Structure formats: structure tokens, C-alpha cells
Length: 400
Image (cartoon, rainbow, N blue to C red; front, side, top):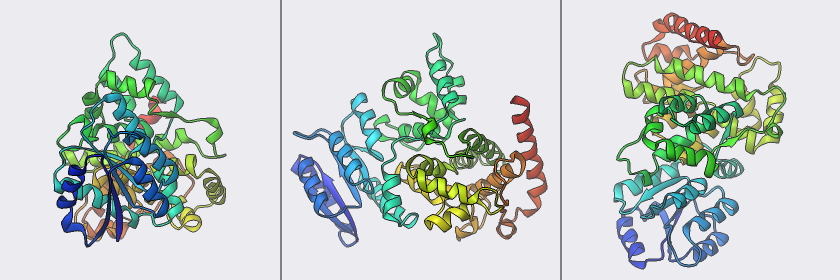
């Protein structure tokens, strides 16, 4: 049974939550407390799977509580449920929370968000890895792209289109922008998955504050380096995969989800690189010079691969389910048993494999699941897709 703790200094709010969530009492073990101090005391005695907290409380506020839980109980999913709308406070919250919901929050939305958080465990069952991912608040950004972004933001007349093009080139910036724009304090009624749309929605002033004032983006530092691993090369591979994936689906929304999933498909490697560095170094050394795919070496060392690790983080951050699913299964699309048609999972799988065929980003065996492609009826499109991938790669080479 999953354990959830709710924190709010107003007893009537907690009483309302109890009534709202009464039907879930057989599947959730719920605790309700009226202060951050009481929450920390309860969490010191027993682990909780999910924390749902208000922001404005006497004594220790929600932001401080989130920061302490992030440090002491990183494996706990941290969700804000608040009417708090101050921008600076919200930015501080985004660095220490996984998702933000605003009051009033209807029962269906609250149940869906908490239930999705609880079900993430099926992707990553090892507590130490859950903790390593749970503490992640930002991802490494390529210094040259960070410089390009800050330079563009400091122009007298900022070109929002130019900023959008930079955002969609970097995995770390893109993931954080999408987490932020889909947080409830921005007031959206539906998810945004198009990165240029997300950039335009946030606006120049907000992105400038994120980049320069709140340090939401973290530049990749040389001390994080692992010999033989190139973040620049990995980012280039991810962007090429994304551009290919976008062209494999005709539905506009699906194609944008595919672009996003393919761009973020290796985000788990960034987590391993920056938060499990020594293990990642050992995995990378063990895979050097061999033809086995990197994810199989990771599975031997960790029991899971970067695919599940990355999907776990994206799930924590509230990314669309089809994107989380595609990242989790981009090496094994056939594991999504209900998939009877070629969709985001399949497009991510094909795009990633074809990008590796044409960009030389890793000396590993390319594993296209041909049986899966036959099952969903697209096997005959492979020659056309290979030509498309080669064309996209040639555009990259010409621009280099």
C-alpha cells in the first residue's frame, strides 16, 4: 500500500482532502498533518512514497519543507498543492518539487497525479536509484548552448524564434522548460509539448529570469566528464533522432510528442553522468570497444538502463504519459503490449536506431525490432525512413 502525506496548516483543507480521497483509502495509506515540522517528524519515523504540501504556512513554509525532504528523503515524490502565485517563490519551488498543482484542485486531477507518481515505481524499483533520480532538480546544459541562450536573451530586441531554436537543441534546457510551462502556476488547461510554443508562452522575461536569476539551468562542468563520453555528441544524436521522429508520424500532435520523446530518450544518461558518476564511469569503461548496445551493459551493472532511469525522472516531472512511455521503451517497443499501431513509442525506437546508423555516435550494434515493425505494419517503410535519416544527417554535416 502506498503511503501519502498531506501537509496544510488549515484543518478545513485537510478535512476536505480526507473527504475527497476517501474512496482511495483501501489503496493509499494517508497521513494528514498541519505543519511542516509535523511532516518531517512523521517522515523521520517511516518512509512515505508521496508528499503533497501547501506553500504558505506559519513557521517552516512549504519551500523549506520541500528542500529538506529533497535532501533527507530524495526518493519521496514531492508535489505542491497551493494557491500561492508569487513568481519568485514558485521558481524556488520548481527547484525542489517534482510537480505543482493549484488550489482548488478537483478530485480527478489530484488522484491522477498522485496515482501516476505511485505507479512510477514499476519503472525503477531500486531505492538507491530512486533516490539518485529524486534529488535531480536540473540537468547539465552544454556551455556553448547556455552561452547562446544567455547572449540571445541579453539582446536589445530579443528574437523569441531564435530563443526557441536554442531551447530545442539542448536536452537539459528543453526538459526544464517543459516541466515549468506545464506547472499549474502558469495556469494552462492542457499540456504543452511543442518546445517553441512553450518558449513563446513563457515569454522572454520569464526565460531570462530562469537562465540568469534563478539558475534553473546548470552548465556542464569538466569535473563531471567521463573519458570517452561526449555530451556534445550525445546531444547531437538526440536532436537528430528528434528531427527524424517528427517526420515518421503524420498526426501533428503525435509528431510533436515523438520529437520530444526522441529528444529526451537518453536523458537517463545525463542523470547517470551527473548523479551516479562513478558507476557510470565503470559502465562506460566496460562498454568501450565492444559492440553490445550501451543499454545492455547498463542492465548488467544496474539491473535497469538509462531508458527506465530517464523515464522515471520525466514521470516525476509530469511529462505526458506517451512521452514517458516512449522514453522507457525506446529499446523495446514490443513491451508495450497494447500497441497495435505505429505511434510515439515506435517512432522514437526507429528514429533513435536510424540516427545511430547514420551519425556514428556509438560503435554499438543497432537493434531495430523488425518483428515489432512487422506487427504494426510499417516494415516496408524502412528504406524510405533510412533515406530520410541520411538526409537529416547530411544537413547536420553541411551545417557543421
